[in-house]
Amino acid sequence: MSKIGLFFGTQTGNTEAAAEMIQSALEGDSVVTLHDVAEADLDELGEYDCLIIGCPTWNIGELQSDWEGLYDELDALDFSGKKVAYFGVGDQIGYADNFQDAMGMLEEKISQLGGATVGYWPTDGYEFEESKAVRDGKFVGLALDEDNQSEMTEERVQAWTSQLKSAFGL
Image 1 (cartoon, one colour):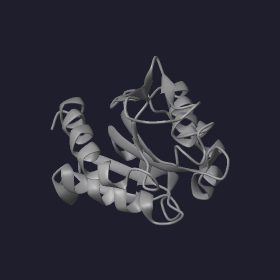
Image 2: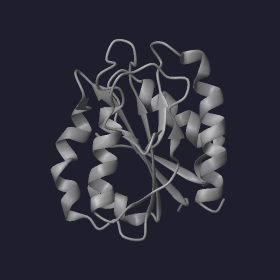
Image 3: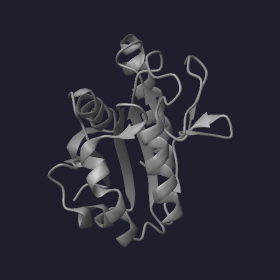
Image 4: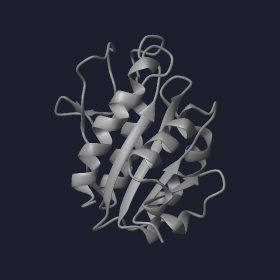
C-alpha cells in the first residue's frame, strides 16, 4: 500500500487534474493513491497515516457535492496521529467573499477530529476578500484558481509538494 491517501471530490475535473499533478510530483502511485470520494469507502481514510484532502469550493462557499454527502459521516472517524494536507480549487475573482471556503470547512472538521494540519500556504499573490480557509494569515493548504491563475498551478503544486515531502517524511 502507498504511504499517502489522496481523497478528492471533483465537479468539473479541475480538482481531479490537480490531484493527479500532486500525485505525480510526490513520485507517483507507489507513494500516493488517489481516491475519488464519489466512489471511496469512508473507512479508507483510516488506512493512511498521511492524507491529502482535495475539494473545490462550489456555488457560494459550499462543499463539492460528494464531500457534502460525507461531511457528517467524518464524525465517526478518529484522525488522531494523522498528518493531513489540504488543497482546494476555487475562483478568487468571481467568489472573492468565499474563496476556498470548502477547504477551510474540511480542515476545521478534520482538525477537531484529531488530524494535524500540514502544508499551510501563503495568501500572497491572491486577490480575495474573505476565506474560511485562512488561519493566522495563511491558507490551511494549497489554494488553486484554474479560472484566473491556471498558469501558476504547476509551479504552486511543485512548491507545495516539496513542503509536503518534508512534512510526510518522504
